[in-house]
Length: 451
Image (cartoon, rainbow, N blue to C red; front, side, top):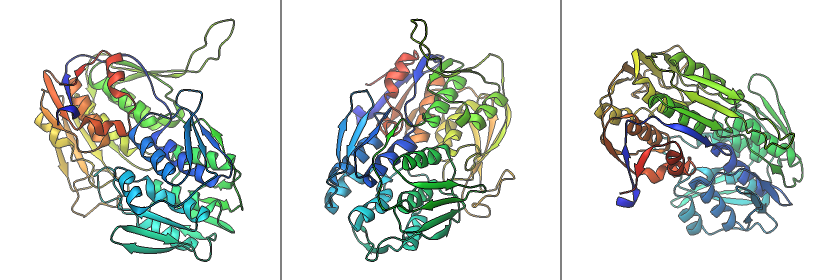
């Protein structure tokens, strides 16, 4: 389809300034949390991305009135008239997102039942929902599997429980939080995910009246309350998008300032970025004073010239190197001298995008072995989840087909770094997680166009 293609004239360094808004991985969950309140909620800095549209549609189907606020990027949620939605309507809206599974707890509290369709999302591995369903059953929910999806009910209400996750899954941790806050009694979750987006969701729920304690060693304790009210919240900025633009600056030998990016949530990435040979400068927020407009904080990323250095890295749950950071960075690593090693321990099928990079001149080998010391669920299994990148490699233009969101942005970076003109197919998938990415590319001097 010609309307889903971007023509990229590569070889030009990205130069300029862009801004990131609220984190995709928090905003959609905060939107779901609004279902739990008995008064309206207000969320700021919401990015205009496909996932937000999907959740907004699903909330509307369930009777939540969603309106635009006075500020750009502000949404207001009124949950006064929560109602059931038909399975057909839900299926139409939910096909491109995995968010519907997180509606379970709030809908069970509000309506006593919930329906979850067959889930979509990026094809980077099975990403089973077993953790979610097991947790919901622990709270007292019954799950009826039918051809059209899952029907859940809670005939005796939801009750606090002690639950330990086999793996610190972000989605399952969110599920437990959204369910436990109004379950009767106390819930103790062990081996929980503690990503910054999880902590920000806890802040949202605490604003609503929840009682949540974050203990050491990945233990979260939630004391259920009978009712919650609305919230007003400005989310943390999107650290995945910020790192993606940083990697693009490095791969294209450019200089990009990412307004809104925060150092604290990106420390692990910044360490690797500097180890590779990239440079950055943190610019702190300065409020208006003496008649000036002040300054929005952010981080400037640039390639200082000379050769980049190879590194060995392993993805891991927070505070490790984020799995969503590795694909954009690998493009930059194709330009580093020596052998770089990437061990992916979070998703088992997240290195398939490297085939396209090899067609562009990269030298990347993928292996089933664990090339690193981090404990890994995929060892001795038939998944190619380690990569060795030999560089530097001169990248040349190619026709590329985007397989998933993060790999898609990596393909885009590769096309920008390559000599010649590439055609990138399926670019609309990038809209799931990157707001106005074409306008931002234009702001950074990239030569891209729709055919």
